[in-house]
Image (cartoon, rainbow, N blue to C red; front, side, top):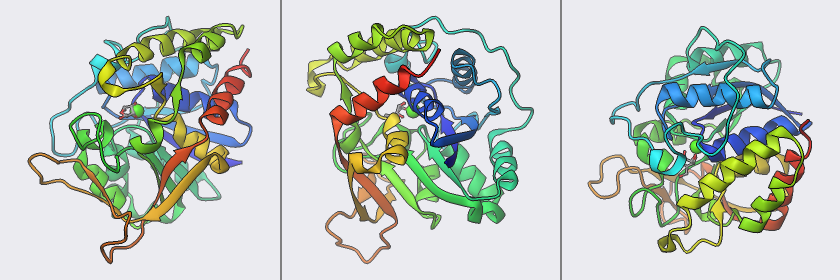
Length: 310
Ligand code: RIB
Ligand code: CA
């Protein structure tokens, strides 16, 4: 049983990551914290609460995190995720209370209470993660690993060479990548392979439970943004669930260990993840970078997980 905290900015694909974690008997989701990214901090917090209400896991503590990136002003992605951040489905209003502490304190409480180290899964900008490392360095040894969706080895999706999560808070990403904690990175290189196709979305529409029905609506909305010919996609890339899928089924992926760092100064490339694939520097190989995925097995995991809800 893998104990995790999910720090997310729901966000359609964050919602799928949360669903995979909740559906699996091999993951113990100890807490959810939310970041500002896909939408404003209020909306991503409300979305996390609505998702846990929908999936009937109101026992999981939730706390909202930083309201802005460490240095940059907040930029959100309403063009991708809609006005609510989870457009496309009618989700229930939260029927439980948010924790009366900020994200970094819920992370600290959770790590202190755990007898064993906890895996931190980050599927949004890394602001909360960076702040936690700065506010509670004494708890670093309670972190098993940080598994994050973010970055790219090559083409970006927000500026030419920069992926959205790292773009929003490059300084936070630099702190996390240089903290000396074991890292697994799911960059666009692997998440763009993790596309769900329209017939597979339709098959989800045939699963007879309210969670699958909600995700059918969410996926149809999310897929529309990715139909633009410029992407060259056959479906919608499911970025964030690659993190949980790796925790559950690492054999589904091919990865390489290498140094990854973040450019925070470049006029054109601020937020670029610089991946030393060819070992051209002497820098520590700090990150296990996921590069390939068995897409069919990944989609089967998503679909089978949705079937487990009542
Ligand atoms: O670039 C993709 C990432 O940005 C995903 O985490 C998506 O949810 C958005 O946060
Ligand atoms: Ca996200």
